[in-house]
Length: 134
Image (tube, rainbow, N blue to C red):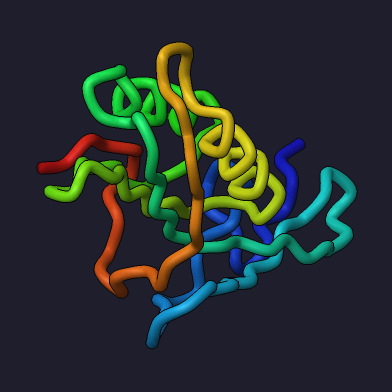
């Protein structure tokens, strides 16, 4: 017997984002997720952006960040900045984005993170996966 379809869920039951963020700063999107028994719970999705400074270019930081984000199932982008920093924009479940932030604070072997600051998201749509962009 098939489980009944719950409004607000996609075919995989992961939920779908109800809309896009407007404005800058930390954004929180909410959407309902159903449990196996059809009970509803609330999940929080966040779009957060970070600027990482220190010895973070030339050490594989972007490739490492992409792998970590993909392993966590996040959407977003990572790029080098002309001033030597790395910029990251990530979207996903709030707890997962926070875990990713903690990983970024540590960085990959060979990197030396001096500072991680949260910046305003650019307000542009993110890819469906996590990508390195120019």
